[in-house]
Image (cartoon, rainbow, N blue to C red; front, side, top):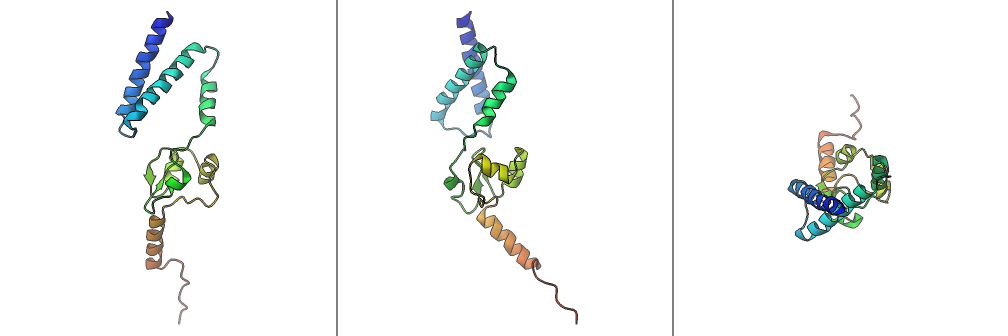
Length: 146
């Protein structure tokens, strides 16, 4: 029976990997696919063999470890965008992206051990907003009435 269960785990891991790779939002190099397939199979085998663990325990262990998709230096390498440490995708501003993941900027900085002054908006986008605000007159005191 263990051979059948192992075969089912291999088959299920292959199906899950194929489904994950077919999602256009997942960017993966070809050399990373075998490692992902191995980790998927190991996870399925572990779940099948451990009948004592509950779903809550598995969810807690997965949420305790947060590995950044890129380094802090690489995330700020471009002036045109900031690369998210959650999914490795570029954004002009991170606030909406973070709120979609249920995080505040402070929680994001704490999760990935970032400095308190880590920006949430790209440098070029900030300059665009600054120029627009100056153009429409924000920040000026009203002229005195004659």
